Image 1: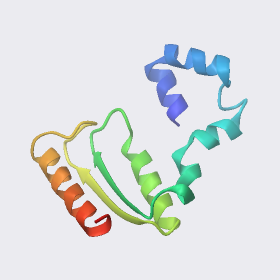
Image 2 (image 1 turned 90 degrees about the horizontal axis):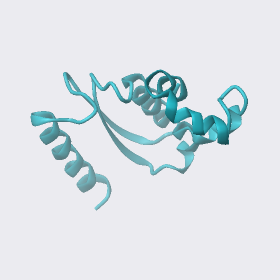
Image 3 (image 1 turned 90 degrees about the vertical axis):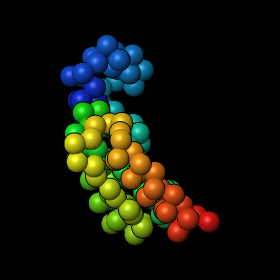
Length: 110
């Protein structure tokens, strides 16, 4: 999915990738290893995810897919979305995300 999105946004970036490892159809195993979903077992047991609902850089469905995969693996997830926010959270959303992050660290990592 990331490859397809990059191809539509920045095809010049993928020229070098294609030279080195080829497109996904030629090397699906390599691309699978690049996916965070392939490494969920190695991730910490407690994870917080913040995502702007209008993020145009990282589609929210990717965050949802990661969240669902983490839950399936038995990880403890705190997942927050922010209405009207893009890739970089701003204003009250930024403040809320940082407050939630501090509580998360206090609860799970202290």
